[in-house]
Image (tube, rainbow, N blue to C red; front, side, top):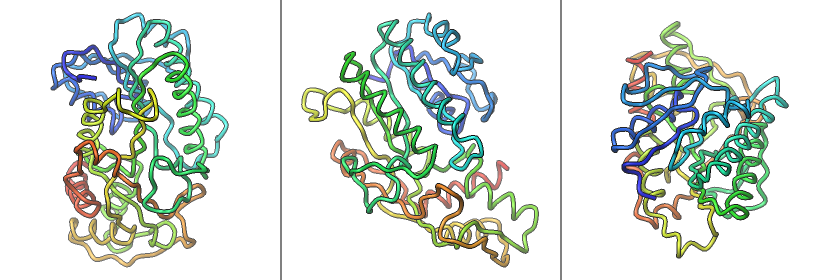
Amino acid sequence: MNLTNQRILVTGGGGFVGSHLANRLASNKNKVMVADNFSSGERTWIENEVELTNVDLTDSSAVNELFNDDFDAVFHLASKKNVNTTDSSRQFRENTGMTQNILHAARECSISNIVYTSSSTIYGEAPQPTPEDYAPLEPISIYGASKLADEGILSTYAHSYDFSVWNFRFANVVGTRLRGAVIPDFIEKLQSNPRKLTILGDGRQEKSYLHINDCIDGIFHAVENTPKSKHSSGPMYTYNLGTRTTTSVNRIADIVCDVLDVDPIYEYTGGDRGWIGDVPRMKLSIEKLSALGWEPQMESDGAVRTAAKALANEL
C-alpha cells in the first residue's frame, strides 16, 4: 500500500506512538484524521494539518458514525495500555471491543486496509530472539491477552472478508512524549530526589528498546514494501519491530543518571520482575522485516540515551 495521498484514520492518534505516526502520515501528503478520547496523550502533540475528533471507540454507534467518512486505510493504535491493572476484565473487554467495532465498521464501509499495533507481550516468556512464528503464544498479562485476542479478530477479517492487515509486534518503544514507562519514571523520580532511585524488581530485567523514529520508519517500510503476491501467510502480514540488542533496567538507570548528572543510591523492590505480568527478558527476532530492507538506526542503548536526553528536557 502506498502511504502518500491517502485518506487515513488513526485511532489512538493522541498518544505517544499514535501522535508521531499521525504527524508523519500528514507530512507524507496524506489527509489524516485522529480519533481519540484523549484519556492519555495530548492534543498539543498533533500537528495543525491533522484533523481531530473526540470519540469513544468502545461505543459501536459512535464508531459507525465515524466511519461515514471515506477512508483508504485505518491505523488502529487505540488501547488500554496498563500491563498491570486492578480491573482486568474491563481492560480486556474494552480493548477487544474497540477492535471489533472498528473492523465491523470498516467492513460495512468497504475499507479493507488495516494497520494494527500489537505487542511483544503476546509471546509471554519465550526464548530469545523470538520469531513471528514462535508457538505456543502464552501471554502472562491481561494486556498481552487482549492484544493476542485482537490479532485473532484481525486474522478472521483478513481471511474471511479479504482485508489486508499489517500487524506489528512492538518491542519497548521510547522517545519524546513517552509516559508511564521506565525512562520517564526514573527521570521524574530523580528530578524529585536526586539522591535515591527506587527500581522495580531486581534491576536485571533485560529487553529491547526501539526509538520512536525507527518504529515509524519500520511501519512505513513494511506497509509500502510487503510483496503481497509472494507472501506465504496470506492477507495478514505480521512483523516484529525491535532491535537486535537488549538493555537492562540497571543499565537504563545508569544512562538516565548520566544524562541528569546525578549519582543516587539504587534501592530495589525485589523479585525478578517489576510487576505482575511483567516479562523479565524480551528480545524479538527482526529478520523478517530486515529481509525487506529495514534496519533500526539505533540499537537499544542508543535509543534509551537519545530518549532520556529528550525526555529530561520535555518533563
